[in-house]
Amino acid sequence: MLVMEVIKHTAESCPVYNSKYREMTVNWMEKVEPTAARYGVKFMGSWTDHPTHVVYAMFDTPSLDNMMKFTMDPEMGAPLSFCSVRMFPVMEHQQTLGMLKQEAH
Image (cartoon, rainbow, N blue to C red; front, side, top):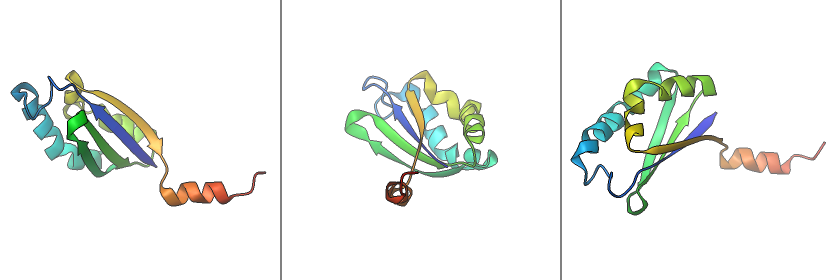
């Protein structure tokens, strides 16, 4: 199951310009992959839209329970002190196409 996180912060709390949050962000970025693996979750990557202060992170998880345990890890939750996070399951292009091509039952 693919899970997308949309992580937002304000311009004032941007870790690029705010040293208070920079260390937390560097720690998250350096530890996200091995920490996710401890919970059976694969970190697929992250993409930053710097002008809008939004980060998109993709994970492949066997269950939402595994994903929740990972996100509740103290080091992974630290950026919540200055970010808001939305997390939701998503489908790949081919999965969506397959669903669209199925006949309605």
